[in-house]
Amino acid sequence: MDTARAKPKVKLTIDGREVEIEQGATVLEAARKAGIDIPTLCYHPAVGPSGACRVCIVEVEGARTLVASCVYPVAEGMVVRTNTAAVRAARKTVVELLIAGHPQDCLSCERNGKCELQALARNLGIRKVRYNISDKEHREPDTSSPSIVRNPDKCVLCGRCVTVCRDIQGVGALSFAYRGRRTLVTPSFEHGLGEAKCTSCGQCSAVCPVGAIVEKDDTGVVWDALDDPEKHVVVQVAPAVRAALGEEFGMPAGTPVTGKIAQALHMLGFDAVFDTQFAADLTIMEEGHEFIERLNRRGVLPLVTSCSPGWIRYCEQFHPEFLDHISTCKSPQQMMGAVIKSYYAKIKGIDPSKIFSVSIMPCTAKKYEAKRPEMRTSSAPSQDVDAVLTTRELARMIRAAGIDFANLEDGEFDSPLGISSGAGTIFGVTGGVMEAALRSVYEILTKKTLGDVRFEAVRGFDGVRHATIDIAGTQVRVAVVHGLGNAGRFLAGTEDSPDRYHFVEIMACPGGCICGGGQPISLDPAVRQLRASVLYREDERKPIRKSHENVEVRRLYDTFLGQPGSELAHRLLHTAYGPDAARLAREDRAHSAAFGRQPMSAAGV
Image (cartoon, rainbow, N blue to C red; front, top):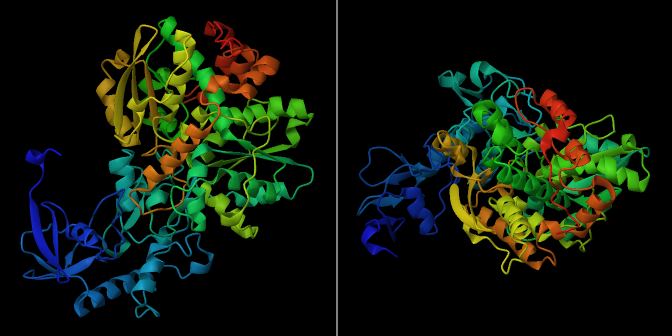
């Protein structure tokens, strides 16, 4: 530790206990360091303090009023009391007023049992509401977004969603409007989220303490499909889901539940259970081929990954000048959807129109992505992916079916689309797509076997990470970015000379898919490290850790696609992005022969 640059410490007393903490810390941080719990509502570890709700008030000796501990700085010799009669009464009044203006529909609310306002009422001993706010203005739920539903009546004005959208994601689709009792969180001019410049990333729903912002529930259409004997219902599961679903059933964060997920999905009645990691390996084959083509033919660089639909939407709306840099590859979800309704339908002899394709994703933006008009490339009349469920929605289905998830025996994914490499696994964490691509591109270009497949330089949780990799004498400059706010700053910094990089990975959500907008709600600041550890451990245990060695992916090319970058591969697995993406995709497929392919042979790797 560099003691010369360490912050000075201060000592204070909280509830009779002496605490030492760095100068500049807040009273809330000092109390938590001492193991003293101060209730909060507007504060969230991923968002930071705001002092808006006043639930965290405490007494500070010498202060004229009670102070909000989440924003009040510590000082040498400070004396704090967190559990006096005045403090308890004030907190109780604040929460009672919030409840009085809140819909009394807890039993039917999606956050029932996991609502922070509900928990506060329980912990503060509130058993009845003393106040009556009957003239609060009613507003209908906003269902205009394909991904997210807002219920303004449930909003407690904590400001978390505004802060995460504006300051962390750099989007600013939500803000406060009006004053006093009319105060409202809304997109500009009270438009719906479907009309706003929302990226559907769902980070607002991940930090909302109540049920004011939730994912759009598609469990009903999936139940209907499962109950329809005319439909062949298949499902795919994203890598990050297996790192987090256990949390919904009381299992500690960082518990891998891959086998339990496969077993639960079979028990729910799906006809086939596939692994999106297969399509992640397929993405590396196509994206790796595209990168090599651009590198060798002096194409547009850097190549920027296209796996994150929230990032794609952000680029389309805020940085269209970078659209030429985005890979033409579809995301693994959409590649799998196209393969299911073409290759899988063919080998199983099933009419693609009879297949109902479901995906389980950590991401609310995947709902939006599946509905994009250009994501219909198979011979089936419907979208390639018919329904998208978040991790939270899958948990609701498992509970509704009475499945004891935590005690399930492990099951297996189904062949042929359930086989994957370790490279496909790490797609779920920031830097994972880059690392997976480097494993394959390195071996293809050097014709040498990697001794250590780990690329530590692209791992970690810094918002922007840079590395230079020597590949066959070429110094390949790469960058990894997570969080849309970081993406905006990164793009602004490379606007004048984007060619300083060869390859860039951008993920919409901070931490990558492990902290997607559809993942279990958590207030634990260590949760992303714990979830990431699941994926890295599973990668290490895989017998195959490089995408180009996936035998089922190679069979797909040998028997159906031909080779990476082939005309058929391009028609099924690639697209175009932009204001008129559907038209661009059609033109791209029509002119795919002009792609200039020199095949990256799957069989020859």
